[in-house]
Length: 170
Image (cartoon, rainbow, N blue to C red; front, side, top):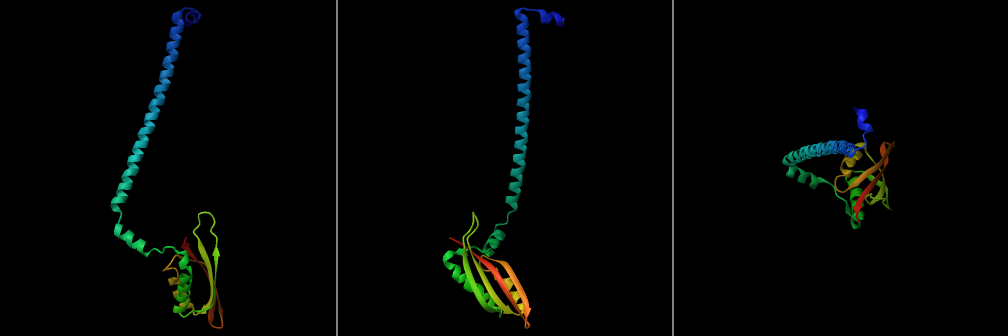
């Protein structure tokens, strides 16, 4: 029977073949449309899940605690205030009974998106407990970051060098 169909030269045969091809194309289109709808449903479910997580986080967000934390966060100083910050950092050393032997600063050009800063260095000597107290207080008041500290014991005193950055905004 299939042999006779292939040997048939009538218009009905071509119409049947066209209908078969059309049905196959429609099956592929329906399959892909269903797959696309399923993916959209999954995306919608994921979006609802993320939204509910965000809503839960927002409901549990403690504004007062966040404000208190922001109030304690050190911010960059203005560029014009960097000399005063350098003096206040040196006064922290002196307040703890540490003798500042020498101090220096140099401006550094930031690369890319880095925050601008001034690189500072101070050579000092004092007692170890005083130095520890000083280091604990050193980064509290301004956006100052210690990026190097070396110490050695000489003649019963600790001599050292502290490298730090004063971050500022233009």
